[in-house]
Each structure stands twice: as structure tokens, then as C-alpha cells.
Length: 410
Image 1 (spheres, helix red, strand yellow):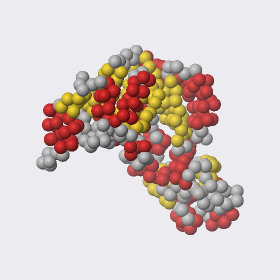
Image 2 (tube, one colour; image 1 turned 180 degrees about the horizontal axis):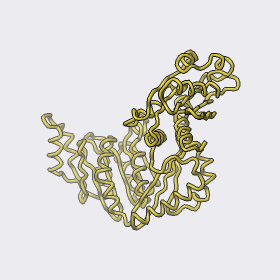
Image 3 (cartoon, helix red, strand yellow; image 1 turned 135 degrees about the horizontal axis):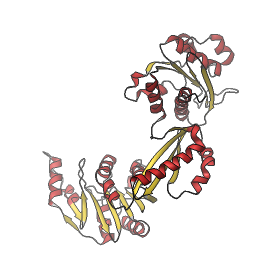
Image 4 (tube, helix red, strand yellow; image 1 turned 90 degrees about the vertical axis):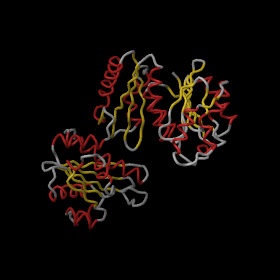
């Protein structure tokens, strides 16, 4: 089945707000195995919404609208769609009562009555967090879904009603799985699996790159869940043979969640000594409930003096090699290990940018060290993103280094 997402709102065209609804809907439809071939944004104009609807009816099986269901005069999505479908609107007294109850002890503006008008032969989707109901319409073998524009209303309504309604209209089962990779770029990863991508039919393969990692979504269609899962297992195995060293999760986990789980299983304590990331890696770990089980201590050693005073980096090391060096990274991690009751010490030092570049040490240069009482590993990474991007990539690379260290992959 092919779908088109139609987002209504002049404020979207002007760039006044970010269109998160389109992203949410695309992701959820992909999980259902429904192809989204078009995303359209149209302003609050009756004739243009009618034209957009007619175009979409000619090229898609499912039309999903967001926005334009409010009480104001320029909220005209429902009216435009009904004109395009030659459907009448009628006042639903039950919806009107629900809107009146929503206002409780306040006077309901007369304009809100408009939201109680319903397209004929439609299923009403109740809005439990707002006043605008949504609608599910089946006409001429097409499915038309009208959803409110506020993201929290749209996501609630889609998850509660639309998801199961679309699923029930399907004659097959769709299952998806996300394979998480890190340490390889999207183009390099694709070179390793290009034959699988080119030959894909079922399951389908899609890659998504961002912030130093690449996600691979595989989606299978079958007439039963076991058959769909078997298709996914086979493709997962084939992908694993090509890129196993870069895969850190088959369960859609973050890299920090994987490391947290590994530390818990091994009953190990970890500590951080961060320079250019300034506590970002620590913050990522502490965003996980129960992080105190594994995190013992963290230092932000941003200056040379803090490196000397907090983790006993040798002043001569800083003079001879600089703060951004393998030697300093090693001494930071080992000093942390000696000072704190931990099993694993992590250090990160680098040049986040956009300034700070020196001869032989460009912006984005980062050294990461992981150390235990028995051994240590230090790696050099060169990133080319923004300041925030380089910091995030550095933190993720540090977690991946811990993962490989614990698995004896390095």
C-alpha cells in the first residue's frame, strides 16, 4: 500500500515551526510496511487543499492529514477534504457535548462548535487530549485519515486508534527490526552490503545515518508473525556476516544502554575523565535509570591544571605532547583508575572546534583511552562535524571503545 502524508498549515511553509508530525507518521508507517512515496505541505487555503487532495487520491491508497481541524476560520482541512470527496458534514451532538465538557466551567467560544461537525460515513477518532476529533474515512477503495495538528494530540490519536485500524486493513503481517552500527560511515557500510540492498524485495533494507552511527532497518512482510520473523532472522544473519564488528545492538538500544547492560552483567564500576566532552558521556550514562549501579565517579578536566590536580597527569607530558595527545589520554585514564575505586577508567581529550586548531592537530581530533588494572587501549579519532556534533561523536566513540574492550575485540 502507498501512502501520502499531507501536512496543513501556513506556519509550516513559513518555517515558523518544525514539522515533526511528518517524521513521526513516516516512521510509524514504515514500521507497518506501508510505503510513503510523497509528503506534501500545503497552506491554510481551501482550494489548494482540495487540489492537493485530488492529486493524492490519484497516486496513493492512504491519505493522512495533520492540521487544520481547529475552530478558526482558516482551519479548513475537514471542509476541503469533504468537498473533494463529495461528502456532507453533519453536527454530532455527542462530540459537541464532549467539547463543552472539555471547557468545564469556562464559556466555550462559539467557534469551537465547528469542531463538532463530522464527515458523513466516517469513523470518529476521539481526542482525549484536545478538542478536535479526528476521522477515518473509506471511500472508493481509498483510506483518508484526518488528524489534529498539535504533535501530542496527533501521536496520541495515531497510536491509540489509527495504528490498529491500518493494521486490520492489511492482509499480511509486517515486522521490523533495527540493527545499530557504529564506527563505520554510511557509504562504507553500503559498499559492504550493496548487493543485498540492490536485490532487496522482502525483507526491505534501509539505512539511516546520524551522529556517528548508522542504523539499518529491515522490514519483512508475511502472512504470519513466525514467517516474518524467519525472514528477518535470515537477513540479520546475512548482514551480520558482512558487518559484525560494527554492530552493537539488534534491539534498537543506544550505545550507552548496551555498555550499561554489559557493566551490570559483569558487576563492574566505571569512571570518566572528560575534557572536550565536558561531562557529556557521563550525562548520557546517567540518563539511564539505575546508572548508579555502574557509575562511581566523573571528572571534567577541561584545563591543563585540572588534569594535573584531579588525575595526576604529568606536567612534562602536557609540555611535551600537549593536552590533546595519546600520552595525555593514557595518563588521564590511568590516573582516574588509581584515584578511584573503579574497574574501568575512560578518558576523552580533543579539539571540539570550531577554534583551537594547531599545527598537526586539526579541529575534530580526539583521543580516547579505556584502562583497567591489567591493560589500556587508546585510539585516535578525527571528526569533521560541528562543535556539538564532534562532542557527541566523541562520547559515542568512547562508549563503543568500552564495549569492544569488554568483549576483547581490541
